[in-house]
Image 1: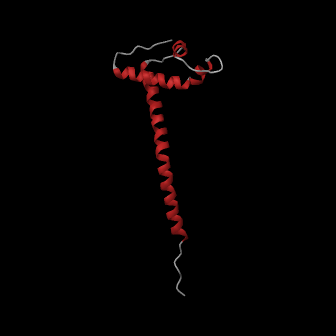
Image 2: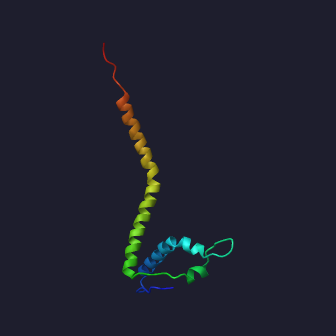
Image 3: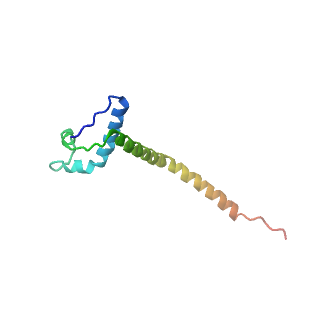
Length: 107
């Protein structure tokens, strides 16, 4: 296993943790395939012995920044999307009612 050593700052350790989280999430199926027997469980021994390529700390920060922003955007969409759909539905109903209601013509 390749281990990056930070400057000892909490933020560096946190970024490394975020990088490892994203990296392990990406490698989940590969790690799971290493399981033995009828259940392909992932255990700490498998993870510890799995080689992890770590780019320089600055590159890790860049990757984490991009993936965290994407994750936030995705989560915001899934929580905000139902409200947006409801607002668009009401907007559609309003304009439909306005367009399809006609004033009576005086004869």
